[in-house]
Every structure is written in structure tokens, then in C-alpha cells.
Image (cartoon, rainbow, N blue to C red; front, top):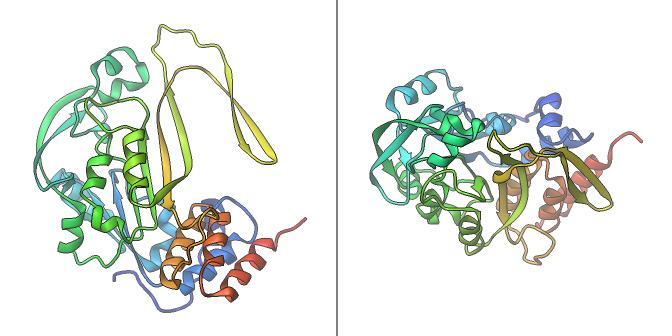
Length: 317
């Protein structure tokens, strides 16, 4: 694997503290997991702006596969990508074959589903999803790509494909069997005609032994002719309650992270060492240290669990 190494790794403390939530001790805990873990394969679907920066601390032990169906854009991205990142010139879908890609005013918002006209016509923040042309693209399923590229187990998948995430998941049933985390954009109300919504994605992943762990970026939109009074949204994590003041608008989408159902404390199932190391490493990278600790508790490596607890407790008063 390109970019892999057998020497001990000390990731940038500044980067890891930023990437994993800024808690003292996380750089040491992250380094412990990174050094114990075998190289990983990650998949980033929707990487026009580059591979997921959250994964950068894994660079020395990771191969990241990104997809860009526009051949010229794929070549441009590949030319400036670091050695551990590969770009493949395919769209992803449930089945292999041709698809129509609706190119939008903001190319990163392009989709195989046509945008909802009432949104780009009446919502200023969504004018960028206005379609400007259509492009025929070649699509493959992720299961087919994994076989073609000989990817031995994909640890995490990030999906941000403007409404086609559920189709891609349906074409990834074999890949998902070995996956620890799915980082996915979900829509609660459609931005694109005919797309799958959060309820569909959630049911699909739960049927494959995943559970929702976290929402990020709860995004609301409102038309320009509606005056919205300020309101508050409360985020609770006992015993702490944080309120955020915001304006109105309808909730449309969020970024969601799903993990395997056996990882949280609600499951008593043991976790094999190799899987647990990968899962705990990715959980820590996202700042989910409570989950990482729980994963290591269920592994047959009590010394690792104790080491992480000690490192994460090593913070100033």
C-alpha cells in the first residue's frame, strides 16, 4: 500500500487535537491506536474538494479511494493528490451502467437526480443547485470497484453525492459487511427529485447492523420573502445542555455518522482485535473517544483499554 510504514508514528499533536475534539490526551491515545493498527482502506465518494481532511492524520497508514466521474476533473484532482490518495474516474450507483449526471451552477452540487425546481427558484441559498447541463457518465457499484481494485476490507466510507447516497449503499452490500463507520449526508426533505431520504437510509443501514451515532451540520433553508424570528435549538449531553440561537427555516440535511450496532454499550457482543483496532482508531479520529473506549473494552486486549483510559485521563485540572 502506498504511504504505509512500519515505523512508529507520532501524528501532529496540533492536528490530532483539532481533528479529535481538542481534548488533552487525545494525541497520545490516537498515536497508541495508530501504531497498533494495520493499514486501512477508506472510500470518499463526493471528493471534488479533495479527500476528507478529517482522515489526513491517517496518511501514513491509509489508502483513500476517491471518485470523480468527470474525466478531466478526475485527472486534475489525481495530479495534485498526495501519494496515499487515489482518484478513480467513475460515478457510483447501485448497478453498473450509464447514468445522466445533472451538472448544476455549483458543480459540487451535481447529481444523478434532477434538483427540485421550487428550491433553486425560490430559496436564495439554493440557487447554486440550478441545473445548467446534463452529462452522460459511466457508473459502477462500489462492490464491483472493490473487487476490481482488490481492496481488502474498507474500514470507513464517506458519502456526499447529492441525493444518490442510498443508491450507492445498495451497491455496497458486500463492502458494508467489513465497514466500521459510514459518514453520510442525509436529507430530511428532498433537494433532488426522487432521491432517498434519511428515513430510507436509516432503515437500510439498521437492517445491516449499523446504528446512528451522531448528527453534524443540521442545515435549514428559508425563502427570501419570509421573515424568520430567532429561535433556539438545544443540544443535550447529560449533564450539559447547550443552546444555539438561530433563525427559522426548514430542516433539509445533515451529516450523519453510523457505526456498527455492536460498538456502543447497548451491545454485549465481543469485538475481535483487528476489527476493534480499526474501529477505535476511526472513532477517535472523529472525536468519539467514549465510543473508542467502549470498543477497546470489548476487545481481548485489556492492556490497550487501560492505556487509552490512562492517556485520556491525563489532562490538566
